[in-house]
Length: 259
Ligand SMILES: NC(=O)c1ccc[n+]([C@@H]2O[C@H](COP(=O)([O-])OP(=O)(O)OC[C@H]3O[C@@H](n4cnc5c(N)ncnc54)[C@H](OP(=O)(O)O)[C@@H]3O)[C@@H](O)[C@H]2O)c1
Image: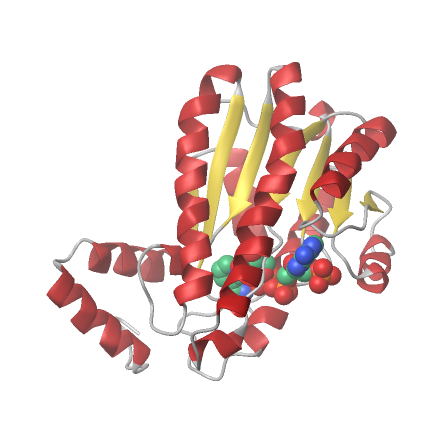
């Protein structure tokens, strides 16, 4: 299994202007990578690049398919091959918990799934040409099974988990390593809008270290905190009546086992 190294090329991170993506950009630059940072907000990207001489801004909207193809080309023209891609850009609209809105759900799919696909397209093509590369897609523990209030967001993350599994099987023979990142709760702009208790929430810097260690280790799934991830995975193995009973408890924000 190929694992990227800074001498092999640049790391491309989408959603690098805040939260997990920003922290991973800084952590990878500390580990010797040159990093191409993509997001829509130029001011936040400028603030990030000011923190490290190894991070370069490549602003863009992941929903713009031709723009993402052009961006991947521009990164490679300026900095050489993309050895590692962390496709992390994503959104959660807290309003989806209060209503069923096709607008919100389509918009969430457009960014979380469509945006990832738009970046996968040029990255897979380039990595196939080199015969190697490493791609990590940021999904979520929320993609493991249905959670009340998360019909749109959770189903985009379930789709990304499926996509990464399928792509791993297709591309491992071509020397391309696929990974899925399934975080629990991490402090970020996204979780700042949540008004419920978030068990075992951690800061983005700690999450970034776990994620970058996972890139270096190379297993398929990078999931944390383990206690929450394996609790949720175990609940997903239950027959549906028991699964729904557990998930109703979870939605009521009762303490989880061992908390
Ligand atoms: N925080 C958590 O607890 C948690 C848990 C599991 C998974 N995740 C996942 O982690 C990823 C990062 O989220 P976060 O928690 O770090 O939240 P965040 O701070 O809100 O970061 C989201 C990032 O995505 C970017 N983005 C959003 N729409 C975009 C678009 N159309 N084009 C380009 N970039 C776009 C944002 O940049 P701009 O607004 O500047 O474009 C921002 O950099 C998401 O995929 C999220 O689902 C988060």
